[in-house]
Image 1 (spheres, rainbow, N blue to C red):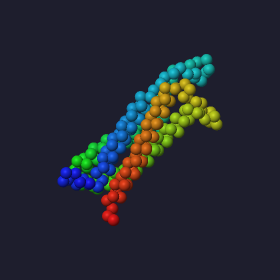
Image 2: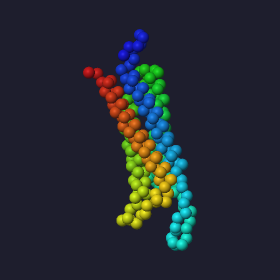
Image 3: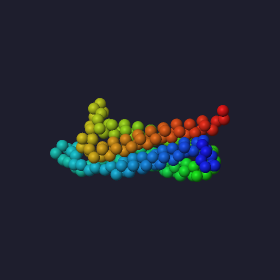
Image 4: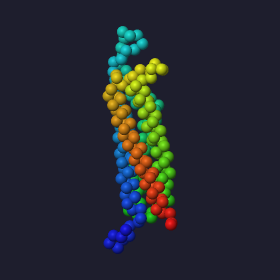
Length: 183
């Protein structure tokens, strides 16, 4: 494409799309982490002896799956902001770092696997909290901790969005690499 005597690189628009998608990844990861970390609810529940009750808190850090979720999405957010800046720099200085940009596809795929695994783990634990498991004697907790479960659901939904953004980033990176192959 030619603009006033200056020829834009073939993947100029793909890099622009990557900047937008990488910023969306950062935003989605940040929102998912903040919503998960702020999820806390304290309720009066019966304890071992039926006539007695105690205040019990539900927090994200009481489940290893939720801790993994927060760690994975924190890494995704950090990766998103760093690669957003690198992609933006690549637009400003065409041809500056083709090797680094070609490695994005590898890192995007790895991060997609990490985020998808963390989302699945957190979703599985949240589902057990929602439905319980009669075979193991695990009761439903979302009936009691409704606000906490609402935070989990919102964080889970935003994390799914982040996973979809990563899928699009992988596809866009592969497309950009395929354009560089001589025909």
